[in-house]
Structure formats: structure tokens, C-alpha cells
Length: 334
Image (tube, rainbow, N blue to C red; front, side):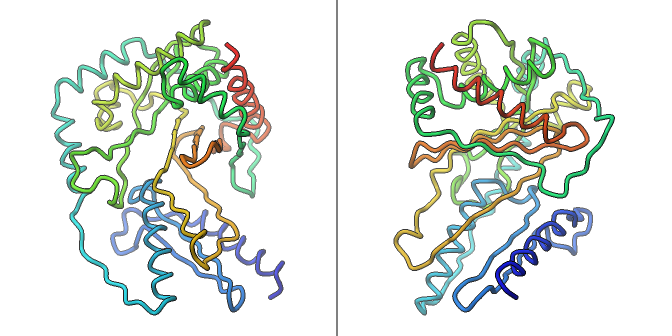
């Protein structure tokens, strides 16, 4: 195959893989798939597909770090030894069960959601199925990122609070409501785990954040920061349990994920291993998902939006993403 034929072949495999959903009820079928495409003597493409139930973003980085290190060791003729590790995810489940038994957690979420209102999304009347991945991306330039970081220091809040507050503005505009509820991806890698940062698995939860959108954006950002502080002790309380307690099937349609992976290693700069490109695709069970990725070693911030075609079309999402960016650009000038 020539280069174009190779690309077409790999793209076709990837698209078919996305349609081939994992069967979580079949215990004889693994929840991961790996493919290696040999493109030339010194070049290959590695493709992995893993169910989110067994891995999170941090684990993904840890897994790739281990994979790269093992590959480089083999290239040098070294012997690879894999030692067994503690079942950290079992520890995580135990802590989750402990949280479910907590009356403080139960009462906290009841109080937090006391003013909660939720208007379910209506499916589009005209559905246009896209062949390509239903996602949009935007990279903030270093100048606006620096301005946002400086503004967060001025307000004494985290960058996450600014990006989340902006997201609440966006969802409030879309739904034409002042009381907004979104799902927050929470990190469960607590110090109570024996190896919180080296363990592989799914160590996060999604919890509802119910917040009022107000005219004074500085106050709103500070309120969001306080809400993040308030919910932190209870983020391991499972979403399914919250739904059961509230006697509801849904609490939000939009999720927000703020990521800063300081475990990303620049091993490619010190070795002969060259990575020409890296691509990723994520899929949640919610109609709208915003993921903010901040590179801790630089001032690069990327915004990735993934959505359900039953509720949004490409034009709507691009307009929403543009609105989100415009609100962000205005934040340091408040």
C-alpha cells in the first residue's frame, strides 16, 4: 500500500471500531482492543480502544508511559520484569462504599440540590448522522491563557473555577435559565489509596454542581470556587446513589472535565523514539461534554467538545464553542 492507501485503511479500522461497542455483559470478552499497523520498516501505528469503566485519563497516561519505557528497554536488549502491585481499585471501591454509608454525604447532596431544576433536552427534529467523529476542538493561544492564569491569581481562585464558571454561563444561555446544573468529573485519587497516582483503573466520579448564574462575574467565579471546595469531601458519593436519593433519572445533560496531567513525560526528547502524531477520542453517555486540558509544563490549553448527534448538530456545537471562547476572552477584562 502507498501512504494514502495506508491512511485510508487505518481510518476505516478506527471508524469501524467505534461502531463495535464493548459487550460489558460478556465476561469472556475483554474491555480493550489493541491494533498495530506496520507502515514501513521503521514506522508503525499503534491503536488502542479501552472501555471507560476500566481506565481514566490519568491511567491512560500512566499506561502509555509504561508502554513507551518497556518498548525502549526492549529496543536496547534489556529484559523487562513486571512486578505485581496492590489492588488499588479495590481500595477505591471500599472508600466509595464508606461514602455511601455517610449520612453527612447524603445530607450534603440533598442540601446542595435543594434549588435544583432540570429541563430535559429535546431530541432534534431533523437528525443528520455524521460519519466523522462528533467532536470539535479549539486551542487557546498562550497570551489569553497567561491572562486567564493571572486573573485567577488576582481573584485567588483556581483556573478550573474560571473555565467552569464560563461553562455555566454558556449552559445558562443555551437553556435560558439562571440556575444551572452540570456534571463535574471528579478525581478520586485520594491519599487514602496505597498508590493513588501509579494505579491503573477508573478512579473518578461524576457529581452534579448546581450554581446560580449572576451578573457580577467576579462574584460568580468566587462562588464557583467555593462550591468546588464544598463538594470536594463528597465527590466519591456515586452519581447513581445521588440519583436514587433524589428519585430522579437525570440531573444534568452537560458535563465538564478539567484536566492537568503532570504525569505526562517528554521521553521522546531524550530518545530515538519519534511520535509523529497522537490522536484521541472519548465518548461519554451525556449529550454534551466539554473537556479542558491544561499542559502543566506550558501555557497550552485545549478545549474539546464531544456531543450526541441526537441533540446537537455540528453548526450548533461550533456556535457554542465560539461563544464559550468569546466569554473566556472577556473574563480577564472584567
